Amino acid sequence: MRQAYVIGVGMTPFGRHLDKSHTDLTQMAVSQAFADSGAQASDLGMAIYANVVQGFFAGEMSVPGEYALRPMGIQGVRVMHIEAACASSTIGLHVAVDYVRAGLADVVLVVGVEKLYSEDRAKRFAVFQQPLDALEAQRYIDCTQGMLAPAPAGMDGPGPNIMMDAYAAQARLYMATYGTTQRQIAAIAAKNHHHSQFNPLSQYRNAMSIDEIMAAPAVSWPLTVPMCAPISDGASAAIVCAEDVLSRFKEARPVKVLAVESQSGQDRAPNDYARHVTRLTAARAFEKAGLGPQDMHVAEVHDASSSGEMTQIEALGLCAPGQSGYDAEKGVIALGGRIPVNVSGGLVSKGHPLAATGIGQIHELVQQLRGTAGQRQVEGARFAIAENSGGFYGVEDGLSAVTILGRV
Image (cartoon, rainbow, N blue to C red; front, side, top):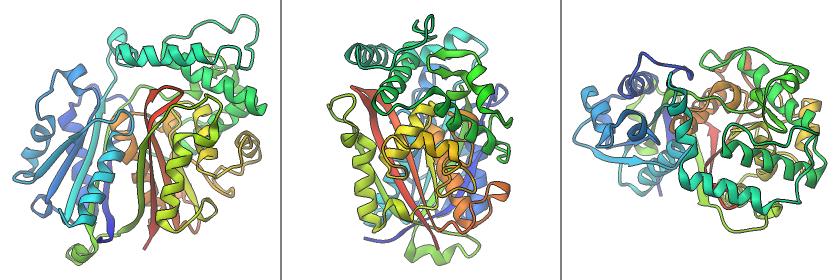
């Protein structure tokens, strides 16, 4: 098995891009990845295009990747289109690494792109209320009845969509299990909004205090608007290559891929966190990398809601069970703390354009390991971990994907 490296990354600003198409965003991110790596279209042996809702929003359901990439000279290569909900581009990265390691390709491009924002509010939210998603969310709410921390009087009603109600129920179950408070969830969100000030690609770049986040409009208790990822457009790209062709790219600043692991969730009790899909996936990733949670210097995790970040970092072993809220209040997981998490701003502040989110995390970690992250740089970062989740099924994420990277 050959060693794989990330040699180039690119990313558009995340936010609203009403004047740009999927193709425009794709080409922006890919052009940056080419420039960053010193690679060009003729170097590629494979291209992977990740997207979730382009068919739904744009009506483009036939080889959208080719329409975006062939005008850039990317043609005559092995191609693949991947949809894995919010983890689409991370799964694309994992496939790229597997192909490189197995000798099936030397240089692989992965790009994730999404346009979710629409001035038509009904259309904007319709994608998050697909029938099966809504059914699974309602099942979760039903199966956790009687297990949740009580909401304050008048705050127990439904939110704007069933998925956010399911995220809120997950948060309330976590609160009931560990005694976590809404203020601690707000501390997680405040940390990420603070970090995002230093990321020029973030959708939001305004710091918010814990009190401001708690006083913000409610989504579904205990979640307020700043605790939830916004609707975003954007694209991100990465170029992966094998060690034995690394010398072709003399200007590249490679980052070593130490482990890529993903797996689907499974049936379990809602509060059986020991069998959480991320915990199981991370255990395999750490074993493959020959490292442990204590070796990580920086992490990017999937915080579609700030309560979700708490669950993920504990599943990764970065904080003890039930302790992430306290660690957030003490600054342990903030820039300058023991293990900074989501220094990019996380999904709640950087933005969450579904298929672009995973490689967006890799974009951040590559900069951290190169030492080029500017004001948000984690000093001395040598090992980094990303966790990216996709979908919702049963009582947890439909799948979890964990990537561990190392400085060369």
